[in-house]
Image (cartoon, rainbow, N blue to C red; front, side):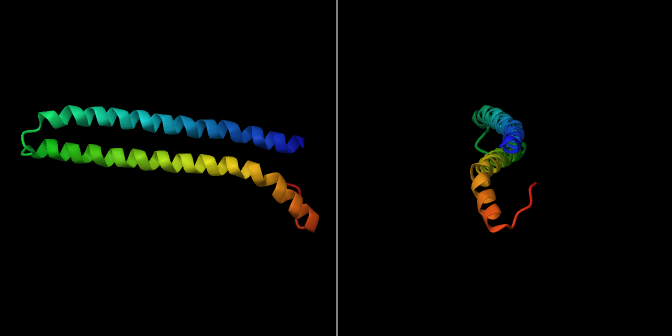
Length: 102
């Protein structure tokens, strides 16, 4: 149906934007990893409190990046799965006479 194709078309730019967000978060994660690797060799047996605090902040941001990437990917996959099942659900609802066109 034409309306279904139009709705599907609007999902794909949104899915592409979610993929871009994931890629941006991945870039941030890689930069944080490089920063952390640059700081660790300069530590003096973990005695420098400032470096330790910076390392902890970097580690926290890396965990946040991983979580955000996972959640964005999950949202994107769920959004695209809706399209896979939409026509079947509409057919079942129409068969039972319980749906209005949206």
